[in-house]
Image (cartoon, rainbow, N blue to C red; front, side, top):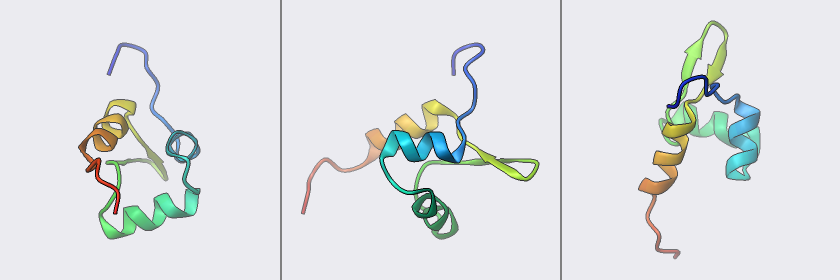
Length: 62
């Protein structure tokens, strides 16, 4: 993470991935998706973690 790069909100990650916020919460409860961190009552994501998660996905489409 670069200096002063802010953490992403659930809405930010939803926009970046193009999935609904509810999907992110479902993934989180199932242990899937990018790593999020609880900061107080909020969930925040490091942008590099989200990008790394995307890169780790298989490129094959069924």
